[in-house]
Image 1 (tube, rainbow, N blue to C red):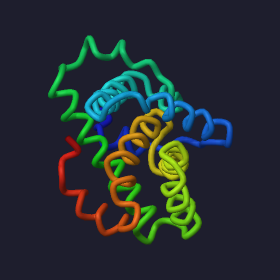
Image 2: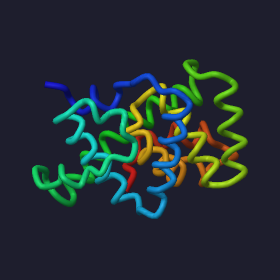
Image 3: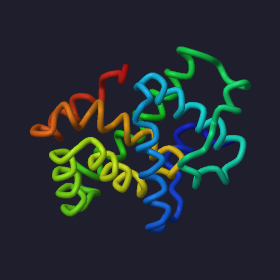
Image 4: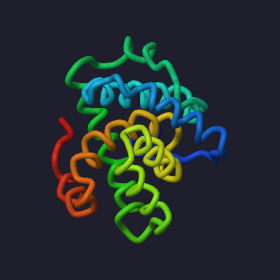
Length: 167
């Protein structure tokens, strides 16, 4: 049986078209609040556990998975655990030794431009560490909760936030 952590850290080959599709899917999730995005991550994890082929679908309608899952706070807790794994991996890419200077520069520029540009940059940065299925909702949360509030002190603040709950 595949664990939550194993599912969320699986990567799939992503070409430019799939990266653009994932960015568009992330942008479509912007109207959702953080709690709903965390629940969406949990539903997507349940869908991926049932059928691994969905890992390449950033716009998956995961509503069908809800009927078989816990509701409310349980979904948020599962989503929060999944997000923490993704955020730690992205932190390593952007602020640690596993990332490139180019990725860091693109992200810093995007944050200063707009939320949409930041979501696109984060989505692109997430694709090497998770699948499109999880990258879309995670990018929106990461931009809102971690990046925009701390654009000037990004890496220091982010390292501190890794220990805090998202909601």
